[in-house]
Amino acid sequence: MSVSAKEMALVDAATDLIRRRGTAHSHAAAVLCADGQMYLGVNLYHFSGGPCAEVVALGRMLTDTEWPPIVVVAVGRDGRGVVTPCGVCRQILYDRWPDIALVISRGGDLVRVALTELLPEP
Image 1: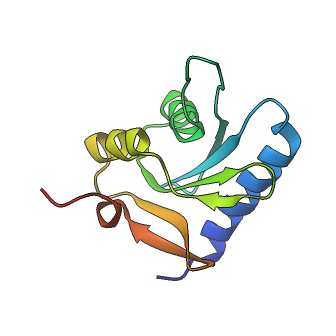
Image 2 (image 1 turned 135 degrees about the horizontal axis):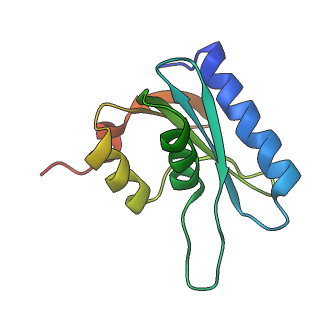
């Protein structure tokens, strides 16, 4: 499914954030909630790992609202553009919000997909 104007706004916000903060972070993420609010986050890079940008953005969301997230997008620095969430992020999203959608790049196009499309079948 093609992305909406609101979903493109998520991509733009995450892209702007990683451009501004990319020297210390490798990814930015944006979350859209059911009430229309957007929450942003960057990964907390550390040699031992660290939380992904999606998790940071979701943590900010959970701090500020009771509304559920409906769409998530992550963007990599250095022109990598929209990236697909890692396996850990997919599992966190599935455990908390299994009906959530993601904006990903597929064949060079941005598309909205259901999280379940990115999970292996049992």
